Length: 105
Image (cartoon, rainbow, N blue to C red; front, side):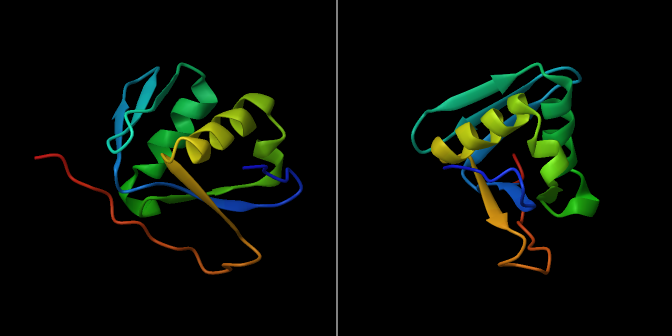
């Protein structure tokens, strides 16, 4: 997926994505395909942590200024390509969507 860095997007992880979030690294795993992504980039770690904050309901706003960071843009594109994450153009969905986060028992 090509992300237009002049737009804002809603970002979420898909329900079948498993996220292991540490203090300084994250690991995202697509439980359907086996594809995964990991990162130690502090901006990406912070982004994924914010997705999992209860107040955000599994969805965060990706502002165009954030997407101008090549590492973040590449990471978001890879999560979409691997079926781990999803972006929605804010102009097409003005109200923030919610994504129920899976709970590991």
